[in-house]
Amino acid sequence: MDILILAVIIAVVAVALIGGLVVSTSRRRRAPEPPAAPTAEPQVGEDAAAPATEEERRTVEDVALPGGPAPAEAEAGPAAPPAPETEVPEPSAGRMVRLRARLARSQSTLGRGLLTLLSRERLDDDTWEEIEDTLLTADIGVGPTQELTERLRERVRVLGTRTPEELRTLLREELLAQIGTDLDREVHTEGGISAEGEERPSVILVVGVNGTGKTTTTGKLARVLVADGRSVVLGAADTFRAAAADQLQTWGERVGARTVRGPEGGDPASVAFDAVKEGIEAGADVVLVDTAGRLHTKTGLMDELGKVKRVVEKHGPVSEVLLVLDATTGQNGLVQARVFAEVVDITGIALTKLDGTAKGGIVVAVQRELGVPVKLVGLGEGPDDLAPFDPEAFVDALLG
Image (tube, rainbow, N blue to C red; front, side):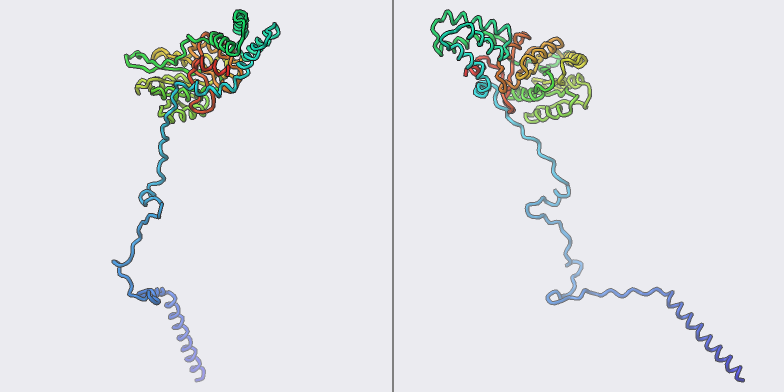
């Protein structure tokens, strides 16, 4: 009997335990329900008003900040930089006269030195030797120095009296005779007719040795031509230096001239050809072609310069070949000039840095060497410091 009661108790306990386990498992399997969202955020003080309806709620709007761009402009991104303002170059007429004082400061050794020597009471052989030395130091050259000295000796002997004004007039006349006042110093900008019967622009090749300021001179010449009412196209045929093409393009943009350029290391003759073609199509007056600065000792590069000229001439004859020389190089510049003259027919000389040297006699020497006139002179670093060469203004500057 006791055993029966104990078995019943054990059975009841087992049933209870099994029931509890089932209930617990079912609770764990049931996902908890999320708490109900509050109907409205609690409000405090003056904000304790009825919640706003959909129509009353404020929307997000684009608002322009004071002084800032409008929202539409901000979304469009930064504005493109403005095009460079076209400059109006200084007129080329009379530039040499305006720059005479600057030139006189650098040339006083030649002019005033000669006047001082000629003003001595007694002009003996030693004095004439000093006069010759002064002329040679100024890079006039041996031949012109001997001629000028003999002319001065003869005229001083005939003159007799030698007042400062008489000496100045005498020296002025003789220097002008050496430089030449009857040479054609105009940079020719008259075009012609192409092989296809179209009007073609004047084509000017600018050549020279590295470091003479050739690309800068080309850019300044563009300003001279624009100032004289010519339309210009620039050809960046110096493909060996990307910086040269960039520099020339900057010069052109300042005066509204288009620049034709090619890939770095490309064919210079091709660029020159395309520049002339662009000039014909655009109806330009002048095409300026800046060639690479060639070392006169490198035969291959000099031959390439001849190729550039031949390719350009397929459009028609070249109007000018300007050789850029650095006045500070003196007699070395004459060696360069001779080699260039053998490759292309030089028609004129642009003499740079003439304000930075007392060797103004290089004007006489280089003209005598090449048989062509100095047409342009560089008298400073400014954009309008390239001037058409005026012999009288130059000699007046020499004499102070």
